Length: 140
Image 1 (cartoon, one colour):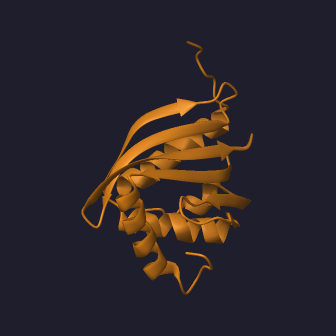
Image 2 (image 1 turned 45 degrees about the vertical axis):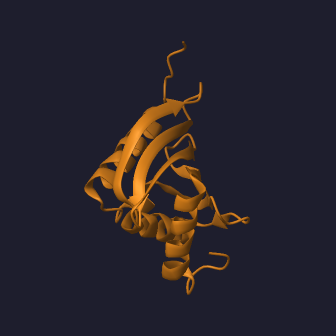
């Protein structure tokens, strides 16, 4: 097993992310997002680009999930990408998923991709997100 050495800026941003999630308050998310950050949804074919859109999506999903907890954290050898395994509930349906987050060397999130299972929980999440974001985002 190889130990990963993360750049200090990534370590700080990741700690900030965990703190925001734990507190249920993503108001300072923009401080760790690259201006051209990309969000890849588990239900939308086309990625969403730009820090304001990524902030809107992640803030909304944080309100939709209940009993959210991170279970494991894995990192790439260069320390710029992490995979965070999580569990949560959406509308009473239990789910598991992963957040795949890629940082730049300055610690800014440049890409955030989510995968979720099982299908019924993913569908419940998609429906809830569509209701909340349809007026703001295409393809939700």
